[in-house]
Image 1 (spheres, helix red, strand yellow):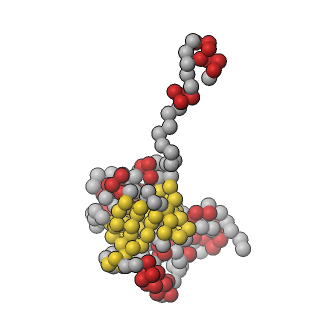
Image 2: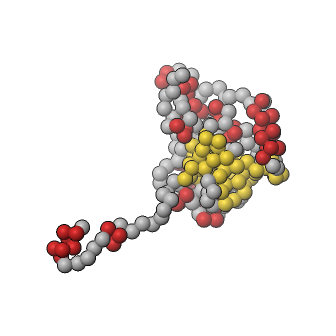
Length: 218
């Protein structure tokens, strides 16, 4: 840089060439009783009006079910759309591309709902898309215990994602923990999607999405 400045008779610094556009990066990890091990959001692609929101839970047990609901306008503004059982053990952790794009292409939904999943999202995804919610549903994570109408709070600035109400009613953390424990006692894992071969082995031994979903042998 100094040599170029001297050669051309100008004064140029690296600050003149590379302009910082932010100090917090483009990706954030959220924690809370919905994702005790963390969940990931590309906050630079999220509308500012969704940086803090309390939404109504709309859980779906596969991307196909969720996509059908979105395309047939069964998802409303103010919903937190959960796609679960799409983590490493649930289905191999596919990209939730079609649903995220269907939401993004709707101008109203793209700025008023959130997509939360234990699967993953594309680096090109935009909007309030939260992935890698851990522990995943197939492992009995809290995302598997959410029911229709529960209240989900997203607070990106404070890096939080919380269940703050049950069936539309606000409750304190102790009350919510008790209800989640009761739901967990009645919860059973879904049958493995893959019954044979390498995918069966991966389903049985995959690590948490937040650990990289590698094969983990104890």
